[in-house]
Structures are given as C-alpha cells and as structure tokens.
Amino acid sequence: MAVPEPTTARSQPDVGRFVSDAWRDRYFAACDAVYALGAPAAAELDVETSFGTTHVYRYDPQDPAARERTPVVLVHGAGSCSAMWYPNTPALSAERPVYAIDTPGDPGRSVQRAPLHEPERAAQWLDETLAGLELDQVHLLGSSYGGWLVLNQAHRAPERLASVTLLDPGGLEKVGLRFFVWIFASLFATFAPKALRPRLASWLEQPVLVVPELRTMIRTAVRAYRIRRPVPQPLTEAELGAIRTPLYLVLGRRSLLVHPDRQVERVPRLVPGARAEIISRTGHGPQIDHAELTNRKMLDFMDATEIGRPATH
Image (cartoon, rainbow, N blue to C red):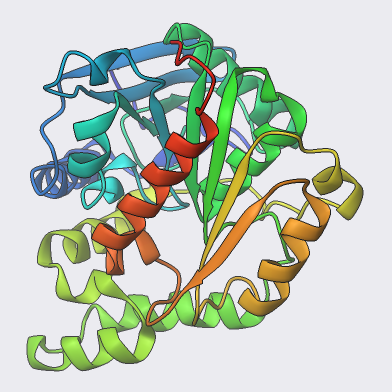
C-alpha cells in the first residue's frame, strides 16, 4: 500500500493534497465503510508512474474461466475514490477481472507528485498505470470526470483499449453553472435532517443522501482534501470523430452535466459505431441509482465487442 506523503510538505500548484494527516485517516476510514458495501477486493496494488503512485483495487471472479477474460478498469469521478463503484464491483467481477483505480489528484490512496490534468499528461498517466498492471487490453469505464479521462484515453492512447464505457461523462460539453449549483445544493442537503433526506435525494437525483456510508465519505472528502486542477475542456468534434475504439455512452435522463437528448444523437453521429442511450429516472449516477440494469447493459456491451475476438490480458 502506498505510504501517503506528509501533508506538512509544501503544496505544489495543480497537485492535490490532504489538509492534514488526521483528516486523511478519517477519510480513509469513511472510504473503507463504503468499500465494505461492495465486493471484497482480492488485492491492493501500487503502480509507480511519472506522476506519482497510483493505488488500485483488484477484484477476481470465482470462476477460473472468467479470470481469463479481458478485464474491466474503473475510473471514478472527481472528489471521490474507487469506493464509489461499490454497487458495480460484485456484478462486474462475477464475470471479469476488475481493477478500480484511485485517480491521483482526488481523495484516495494514490499519491500525486506532478500535475496530470492536461490531456496529454492524463493519457500518459493512465497508459503507464495500465502498463504497470501488465494489462494489454482492457474495457475502460469512467464516470463523470473519470468519463473525461476515459474519453481522452480513447482519443490519445487507445492501444490498450478493447472498449470504453462513459457514464454521464465529462468531456462532451463545457460544464455549465447548473451542474455546479446541483453539486453545492447536494452538499448542503447532506446536512438535512434524516427524515428529509429521501425527499431531497429524489428531488436532487442524489443517491448519496440515502446511503449513510456514502454520505459520510463525501462529506469527509470535502473537509479532508484539496483538489488542485482546472475543469477539463470538452473534446472537439474532430477529436471525437477520430475515436475508433468501441464506445458506449450511458446518460441519466435528468443529467445536469450534459444535455442527454443532444448527446445521445451527437456522439453516435461523430464516433463511428458508438452506442448511446438514456436511463430514465436518474441523473448523474445511473450506475448507482439503477446498478442492476446498468451493470447488465455494460457487461452485454463488453461481450458484444468480443464476438469473434479472443480475450487477452
């Protein structure tokens, strides 16, 4: 396991950090409570890259044959860590090996030492991480900011990618004011009385409010960690049009990050062969709100991309 660097060290521009060792430990305890809701990790790995140490959780299928299939790699959203995949790790790891990455620069057990928010550097970091895990072909899944990382990888360094799945991702539109208002409203709602949280969760399309462990983790992250990076810019139409990796876009009907109807038409038009669909009765977290449905759709998409092609690690 990576040993966190002392938080008393001089902070660097564009490098995230915990505000103190005490808050870091408190946050990790909250994360562990969320990890416990999902599949148990078979191993925790540390991969050294040019940008720091990347911490990775590996989940192994029980079926030996499933362990030989092309693995899934999960990239979480901003301000979180790989614990956010707890609704997905049991189903995904039942059919394939799964690797969940803590992105450096977000509150997790990775240790960032250099900025990686620029598109070329982000692609280099993720490629170095996959190489360090000795993964030659993967199905790459990303949510929100992780969706931007995955989309960027498909454009700049697709050689290791069997497919990409984007869950209400960044990288398709400029992030608007309405999304930031929703983020702040959701954060304030975490302080609401328990009796009001289900109603607020429904109104805000925010499942964080009704999962106590997840609510504690998110609230603690805001206090514990300082993210030091700008909001990523969306890919241009020319960049999207250059993508040849099989791509699956899943959007929430009530998403405030993107305009679902616009993107469900636009992305398949620009990316040859891309699949896109909208999940009803959800916003920014379809893989949490409708985990069983989304897990099945993602696995079916991965299966479809492998028809006639042998799976390799």
